[in-house]
Amino acid sequence: MDNPQKYSVFITRKIPEPGPTILKKYLQVNMNPEVNVLDREVLIKNVKNVDALLCMLGDKIDSNVMDAAGANLKVISCYSVGYDHVDIKEAEKRKIIVTNTPNVLANTTADLTFSLILSAARNIINADSHVRRGNWKFGWTPDLFLGYDVYGSTLGIIGLGEIGTLVAKRAKGFGMEVLYYSNSRNQKIESDLSISYVPLEELLQRSDFVSIHASLNKSSFHMIDESKINLMKKTAFLINTSRGKVVNEKHLIKALEDKQIAGVGLDVYEDEPISVSNPLIHLPQTVLLPHIGSATFRTRSKMAEVSANNIVNSLFGKGTVYRIK
Ligand code: DGY
Image (spheres, rainbow, N blue to C red):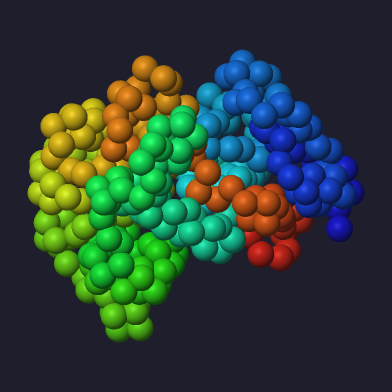
């Protein structure tokens, strides 16, 4: 092996073990010890001359950052499965390897998707607040927090990748009919899980829960807009654990205000974090989470391991590299 310490990496935010230990064994490591998103100037300053960059969703890694890093930069390792924050074309032009963390977070995110479906359908958050605020006055009540059945209803999955498939599996345990729409059909999964491919419009019209699992790119940007939301049932819920920009948030807010759909369960937003002035916060039919789809101790640690190994294996030319391009 080459002299290991000749390479350096900048980690834009504190990541859990074993990520730092793996990297320290082979590289000089500079890790931002803070949990906040780095100011652009601080990011630009810290990437200077690094061989590798380990970055988060909130870091916009564009040509300016790559220029600031300079010719040494060989690997950009995303601490995520999504990589829409990286300018892939620019990286390709400069022969920089870009990597992500597949295979380790899909079950965790599928679990969270189901918790959003159940919470939204059964008023879990509002009912919990009702109890905590001392508003529960009359014991068991025939019409207190009536919601919608998940069991036996129809789920429409947009995007049948790793996470979409695992959500479909869980839905089968709830006796749901599962429809899906994806760029490509997967007839093996259709027959293994007894799920049906339908056009997007039909999925929106027939589903009681529409769950988005599409990655963000030019063709999925604002894929769900007013014209699509208007196809949904008035009793249906929209669930999004993928990327906020797949949905036109202004149109979604309008649809909720007009009671065009029954509610939403969101883990992602057009601009994160959302502020208290965002109307979504003031609408009662929303369950809102702070982008925690993959947030379990085990999964975040696995992501750290994979993203660190992606760097070491790319630089030293051995082992598995989860390369995007
Ligand atoms: C991802 O990995 O892309 C998620 O959004 C965060 O874990």
